[in-house]
Amino acid sequence: LTLRLAVLLCGRLLPHLHELRARDVLVVARSMSAWRLPGRLAPELEASLTGALAAAPLAHGAEDDAEEEGGRASGAEQSWREHLVEYCFENLRRHEHWLESSWNTLLPLKLLCMEVDCGTYDSRRLVDLLSPDLFAFVDRLRHITREECEAHRLRREGGDEDEAASAGGFDNEGSADDGAAASMTGDKAAFGSEPAAARLQQSFAMEELPWYRIVVGGFVQDFPVDFLIQPKRP
Image (cartoon, rainbow, N blue to C red):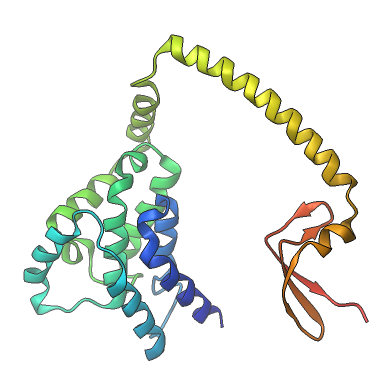
């Protein structure tokens, strides 16, 4: 069940990788590694992922890489894992400036590269898998040190800022934050005064089971939750 759910979610996300954040793209890539999904997939699951990859739009620059890859991959056909991780790397190109200046986001990329090169991803090594242009992009990012990443972050945050404009922006932002805080305080008071039973009635029940109720948009005490499984009391 867990394997089918992981494949289903991955298949739904693949056509939309260009809309996701860099961290989310890396989560998709690492979730399909061999050490997370050991063994061979069932034929219908592998066909589902292959179809999702075939229907996914090409990332920026992938057309040229596909032509280069056609000549290099004539002797070795790509597996679905290799196709998936290559597609994820392609979709990270648009996040290059963010990756090189965000250490917490760069670390999962370094781990992904290590998994591929050490064989735990069940694919060829990066230098054999990726096109020269894509490999150069990935190889540069995975060798960035923490000091270099911090320097990129400071350069990105302070490069185009004007001190006077920033001071005015912070003042306006502070007044807006005060108003937002007051509004949130009022909303919280109103939220806390509303009975839990009345809030629960506003939730949308997805499915009624003999002993459980699956609810979307429910509450646990005063905390809203997206997905809730409630036991039914006899």
